[in-house]
Image (cartoon, rainbow, N blue to C red; front, side, top):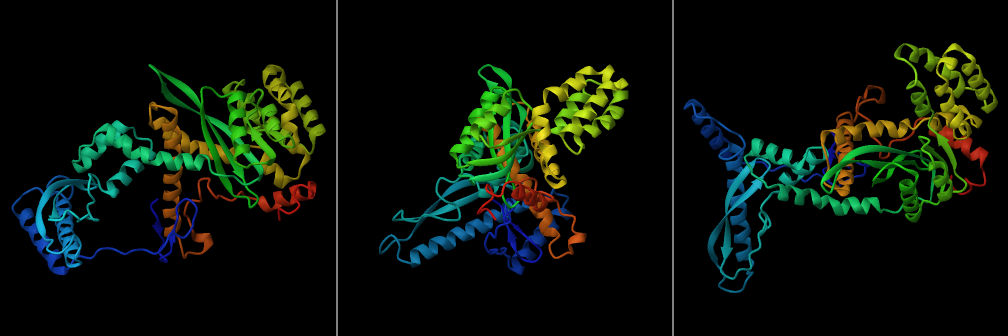
Length: 456
């Protein structure tokens, strides 16, 4: 993964903020070489010739070719001076090669030795693309571009013509890392997890179907959020979630205090099957949205204000009284289906009302995952369809890395400034600390001291 250097000289891992090692510095060309290049550039400009920096025949393409050619000659010289390949080993011509790079195709002549023992490092044998071009392909894929769009973009910007199979193979190099991430061991205790689903269009045989993309986000004991897993299912349902929750248990997640979800039928039972002592909390925002969907546009603002008395009540009895009052109002009588939404979800809605304000803020909504889902929907909407389930998970995983890297760059630019002057974006999800977590943690520890023993 690409690292980002802060103005202070520290290198940050975009996904987690870990040190990534010292900067290797930049290659500085001699001034005489720069002067010669500047002269050529000025001469071509005066002659009215088009001056291209990248692509076939571009200035940077030619410069890279010259630098690589000189580096290969130096490599072979060191190889022969070191006595590699036996006594009498010497140069033996060269082989022409085109190396596709992020600035365009570069032509080089790879030198050979008579013994055949020379293995260049700058342009390895069998290499057809630079690492930089592979990084560009993966970055474009992470932003939701299709294989065909990437091929067209690379051809238009660099003049490099890559096949669709080549681009697919480049992006598939992330599959092993993605699967390792998907199967990584988890902490045994996550106080709170949020689960929700997105929709992606995936090719299934000769048809394209809408499939559910189930996502679980957990808050660890330090209050940091983590994506625990991404699973693609034929449809969003309790059975699909049962398999996902079982996988979380198999990866080491033994205990969950609260699981916040959208109230899907049968989901609560599957959660308590996986973690019998867990409390299932239906997202209040989902209930509000479902209620408002029955109201006309002109009545929605008034209904939202009336419903507020229900989910801000001091306890479950007061909330029930507020619901009864709402059902007796003109809005409640006009939209009885909105009242029924709360009645059906009552047992899963009321648990958070037993706790203090700090814990209520953590539990009453799945907004902690909704903001993350909003970013992921942008990626899913960019692609009209995905060829298979792995492509969906791979794209979302790369999108997480790409977004976290972008935000790390923004934070690095603000390094050294006072906290109140920093405008860098926080982490999207990975490692983002939940606001008010210490107060919520204190409430949970006071409520269940036996379950929090040894977790301080």
